[in-house]
Length: 567
Image 1 (spheres, rainbow, N blue to C red):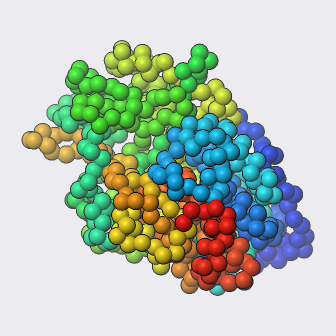
Image 2: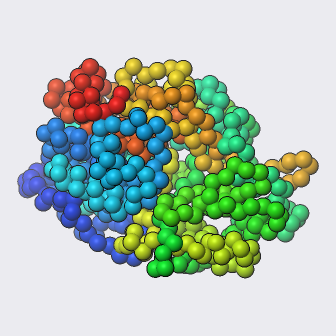
Image 3: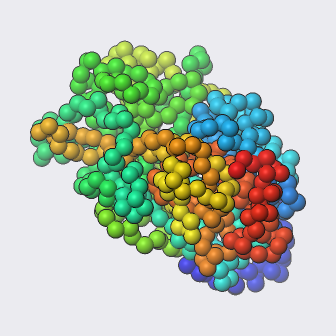
């Protein structure tokens, strides 16, 4: 979608003033409820010229900005919210490491300086990210959302923000979890799950042959899905999809579930789980039925693979995640998040990639804000239900009430995480696509920009009615966990678009990958690793005045090794 903004640029050229720098420690304090989208209150038209513009305050964005700045580039990092660090400072501190030995460069520096690879606090992570950005001399804009992109042939000429600034740069990096910049630049992408036959992936599509050890399936019990048991006319219980699932191996546009990684406390000053506005205990009717279906079920409040055990959620001091059949993962709640569209269809032939913006960015942000708040209401309501509803077994309820939100974290958003865990959104389609074969070491990328090693991992994509042993029941579908053969390289060609589509953009987060391979790559340490490599590649492209696709890999490899990247 090529859009001309010549008129805007001409009106800005007269002033040609540089916007005052906002250093990483100059943050606006916003109190109250968490939010995804806060429209800019004031529009201040101005033009800013930099060497590298990095859009997205994720760990990838931070690492890319630091790397390029250390190489002498003038770098602007643009964060949509008032924070930097994405999920690493947004609650995910029980880090999904894979093999520690694969982590090098800025990622290793971060973990070394914070003092641990795991179980640090979110606030400590953000404080360190800000310090590292400041030390590198990176300019950071907070609370800025992309409004539009101006293309000149196959290059991003400029990007305009909702707040009025227009950014011109030699190279851009899209380090968002959603891939909004790449879509605005008309770069090809996919959403959802490829069919199994598209890339010959055993884990692809629906009803995978290798699943999550058959756990979190309501203990295999025949939980009746209807509001009035055995009465289909009464309708399905809430949080069960009315869409018809596909057959094994078929692809679809469903997205693996999102949640908030809560930071919990056992201290006396812990904050009780809040009752969300509009709370309705009926929303958790399926959970209530499950909790009371069989007194032999053991509730672990943690991960479990034992028969007749379930979460129903992980509760531990610190980072607490989904862990159960009906848990903090809001299954089916995020299908519209990536680009604002969703169709409940299935397919055996891989559809062509998408290009452009099917929904204008502002409308997309507004839609995401609604989805974000729905996730807040769902997860807070889920916890409030467990802590207070008389349908919850007393012993379980007492254990739940030992915990609460940590008063020392997320203080500006009422102790609730400010970042939704967007596990997957758009995935770029480039000349190289990372697949299950890469993860299994059956195909090895020769142009490594970092190693991944975490198991191929997906959370559930749908909760549906099925027939089992002659009984109608409910099951979750879409989760898998499958180990990689060994640490494997991620290809440089997977983080750059096709040259004919965009010659000055790098994409270290929504990289070119199938859903299956992305399940392994999508870990915060890997995002830092790929972000640093993108920053180094951007600097080389600027030095040699070439497209990012034509960067000499030998030079890039040498640079990354000097900077202690593990390839």
